[in-house]
Image 1 (cartoon, each protein chain N blue to C red):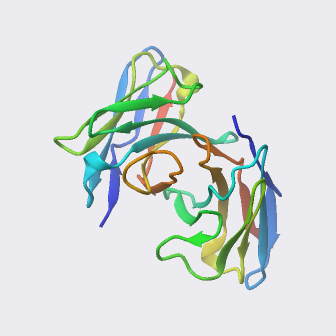
Image 2 (cartoon, rainbow over the protein chains, first blue to last red):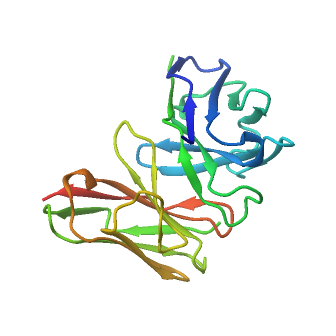
Length: 123
Length: 106
């Protein structure tokens, strides 16, 4: 079964660092783009960025460029989303998702999705 | 950035009735349009891609239509498990989502 399994919920303080993970099962990890999406209540879903584990080619939404770091380790089939200095405004649910077809990210939807990682940043 | 606008924000429907959800793009996206269902505690579930193609395992009561800037998701006969929030997403130029339509029980 094709699935993405994310790491558990996190509670952090402002200024702390964090790296959450997304483990892939049931497909050839390095052949598919993996994306990250933020879900904040009242703000809907927002695309953060994508990575191609085969060569670590990474693209970021302009809204998130410089705010997060996306990486992947193809040897263990895992993608990551990382913050070096969290803010309270980073509090949200974060989903990883595979692009539906292998190859180019253009013209490609998200499917399947991980179960989500809730990140809470509070002093 | 392509802006996606969904309407209505909330739709109150009785079980067994038809639900019609709308999604408008700020510029043409051809048929590069997907619909997702989101329930509390569950990840988003792909329902429709290519504006009208049902994803694997999606019941036939879900149908999508439209092209260009106007799109519709129709749920033919609402079941109890269909009460959820539905998002449209364009993937013609990067990815942007609508703000969602909550389908609630009337």
